[in-house]
Length: 152
Image (cartoon, rainbow, N blue to C red):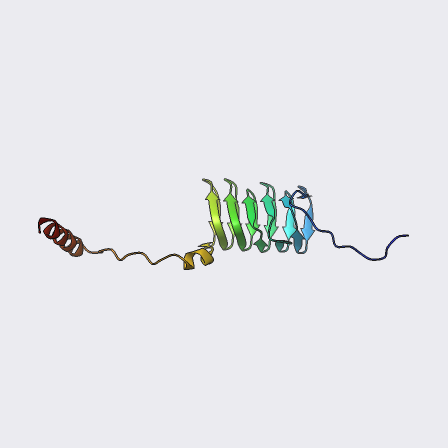
């Protein structure tokens, strides 16, 4: 007997989804595993858990916000990008929007038209830097004081 209950499909990190070149998806996408975009997506792209990877190929275009832990871009994204783990911008990457990242790797030729913002959670726990002398006079005075301390 067939059950009328629908079971939730849980994607594993080994599952791959491809949006092929020439395809256009209109609407928000929530995925698990790895999403490879060679075509066009008009809508937001998010991952359905705390793990996931998005690859935007050279021919790929996403028009919408992207929130994925690990993102590799070699195509175009028109919208804000949030990478909670790692962001890789290849030489053909074009981002029109703000980029928030934990770790970033950017190749020569990649373009970002927006702000690059480091994930702030880790920055809040860092100690404030020591104040350094900013004028020539202060630097000279500090050196003189240090040399007097050595002689004494």
